[in-house]
Length: 443
Image (cartoon, rainbow, N blue to C red):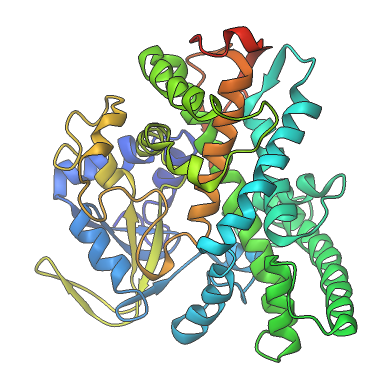
C-alpha cells in the first residue's frame, strides 16, 4: 500500500507523466501479485484490476456495485451536474437526450456538416502550406466540429485556448493557490460558464419566441427544450456542454494523430487504405460530399483506426468507487475503496491480442472478445460521443488521403502526457496537394 496516506501516489504520477503508467507501475505489480492488486493512490485505498472479465464485471455493474469516481479537481472543472457525476435514472435521462443527436437519424444530419467542416478546414488551414502540425490542426478542427456541428454554437477566437487552460487543471490538486494549475483552470472555467450562460439564455429566448421545438436538430436546442419543459436545469445544460467538448476533442485528435503515425510506419497498410478511399470517390463529382453509406464502406480504415487506438489508447482507464462490499476473484473489495480498470490491461495482453505489440489492423476482421477493446470504456458509461469520434476520424482521413501527399517529419516522436497523451512535438507533417492525375498513386 506504500507510505501512510499518500501510498504510491508519487510512483503512479511519475509513471503517468512519462507515459509509462502500464510499463512502470501496473505491469510490474501484475507480475508480482497477479491481475488484481491493491495500492493507495491520492489518499484512497485502490484495487487495480486487469482483463476483459474484470472490465466487464466493473463496467456493466455501474450504479449497482460501483459508481464513477473522479478527483475533486475534475468534478469542479467539468461540472457536478454533468453525466460524469450523475447516477441511475438521472444519468439515463440526460444521456438519452444527448444520445438523440448521435443516433442514426442524428448521424445522417451530422455527416454533411462534418464533411463541410473538414473541407473548409483543409481549404483555409492547409492550402498553400508545406508543413502542418497535424495534432494541433485536428484539435482545432475537432473543437469546432463539437461546437458548430453538434451543439450549434459559433466558435469565437480564443475559445479553444480557454478550454485548454481548464483541461490543464483536471488532475491537479484542488487547491486554490494563486498561480497554480488548478487556480488558472478555475478562472478559465468561470469565463467559459459566463459565455455559455449567455448562449443558453439567447437560445431559450429564441425558442420560446418562435414556439418551435428544437427544430434545427442541434444538441444545444434539445437541451434548452428540456429546460423550457422544466426537465433539465441551466447548470445541467452548461456542465454537459463543457464535458462533451472535453470528451470529444482531445481524445479524437490523439486518435487521428496515432492513425497517421501508424500509416506512415506501415506503407502496405497505407496503400490498402488509400485504395478504399479512391474507390469511394471514383463515382463522385470532385466537390461531392461523402455520405453515411460511403462511410460504411470504410471498413479497413476503421480497422486501422481501432488498431491505432488499441496500441495508443486515448484514455488510460478510469476510477470507480465501491458502493457496497464487492466479492471478486476470491477477494473482498470494501465499500468506499476505489477500483481502477485500465485499457492496457487487455490491449497489451497476449490472451486477447496475439503478438500485442505488433500493428495488425486485420485482427479486427475476427471477433474481438467483449470488453477486451475498450478505448471508449463500456457499460452504461460507454463514451456518449463514440459515433461522433468515429465519423470525425473517418471523414478527416478520407479528405486528407485523397487530397494530399504527406509524410512525418519526426517518425519516432515520443508521446507526452499532460494530463492526456499527445505527440510531444505536435506531429509535424510535410504536405503537398495531389493533382487529379495521381489520386490513385500511393504515398
